[in-house]
Image 1: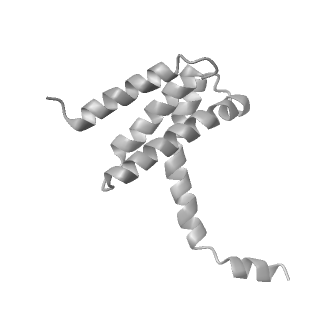
Image 2 (image 1 turned 120 degrees about the horizontal axis):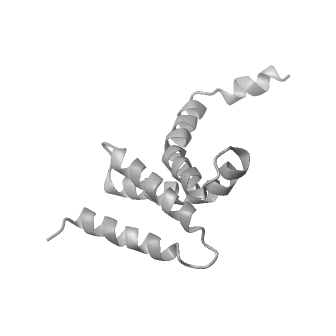
Length: 114
């Protein structure tokens, strides 16, 4: 019998592939975002299952949504490649921004303006 993780990954991959066939869905961007999100989940260490699922969902959605913007602003012409990179980077970049925001003293910033 296959492991639950393998079975879940296979089912999710099939669902993404089928969703990519629906009208109005950019299949290239969807598959690119899925592979980028899968890369994030596979390389994430020391986190729980629920956090991995959240990372997967956030990366998938943001990678898909960011692909058209990346294509329009960069020399990348494939929405699949753009979605892959967006999905792979969104969690890392956002977590870094959150950590930096925690160390910023907003009161000191506003006091300088006076």
